[in-house]
Length: 129
Image (cartoon, rainbow, N blue to C red; front, side, top):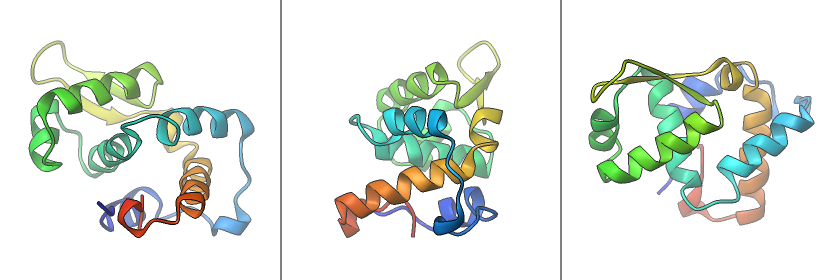
């Protein structure tokens, strides 16, 4: 399932051209481990895109992304463990926000995603348009 324009227009709108990105090596490794190597990598990127648009809870995410609640819940845990998202609240309706770790390293995340797309070269699995 290709990503819609949300990722490009919301998250990466101010990222420099791919060739001009200065990559943070530590962040590249961290992003690669979460967004490229494991199953669920596309789901996690879709969650990041949706949360960037507006803070949202797990139920709303599952509806918006047309995913099983448990799938979203699992991927939220992976993103939280990596400190990519922040939880506000203490219960069922907890809201999730993008962390400073993501927002301050967007060029490196963009670089990692584009590099993976080039390797995969599969139109049906594009991260961004």
